[in-house]
Length: 149
Length: 123
Image 1: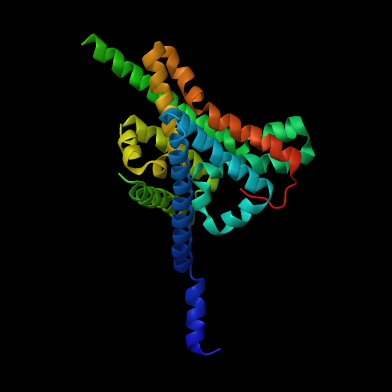
Image 2: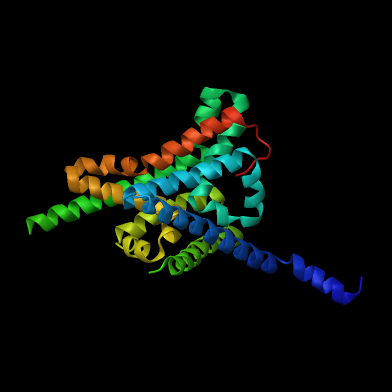
């Protein structure tokens, strides 16, 4: 191997190139999933759903697609290239829940699936709710003070 | 705004949000699970400061499909419940507004464990 080829090989495997490649993939897949969500939203509102129902239906549809692809083993193959592109959209939440449930099958349906389905969902729900409660308290106090003035 | 324009804005904003997460994974020691927790909490914060709703008007699903949207949805539920029921809304709003997402993910997870066998592990 001559020195030029060697240099190229080193460059190809250096962290900075990997980081750039990962970022591009995350951008394309993440943006793509959001576009699918937007298209679904346009579709549902075309069929007469109000804004709130639309939002719920889009979330549930994406969660369903991600759950199905996880079950079929396709999600992991996409996620290997997409990285945060499939993780950060609600698809990543669905994949985390479904894959944990499938992994725990051999440990039974109560302490296996029933408990471990929350391995990733639990922290997300817990800290989401915590943040929500903190915001709610501040909002309540703010509103009460505002009404008194 | 026409639909193609909306889709471009959605693509760019959703992409950027995912790139930030990817960089956090690659450059720091944050695990994917921590990214999810961070993004949900961040979503509540963005909603709390009043930035989420204007952003959603412009970027649509670009900000509501990432987990930031899930967090913002929790915050929105809390605000609505506090407006309607007062202090008790602090406790009821978050789960009410996120119920569909949480319930569907858990149910689909359970069904998937009936139907499929694991091929590879993640997270």
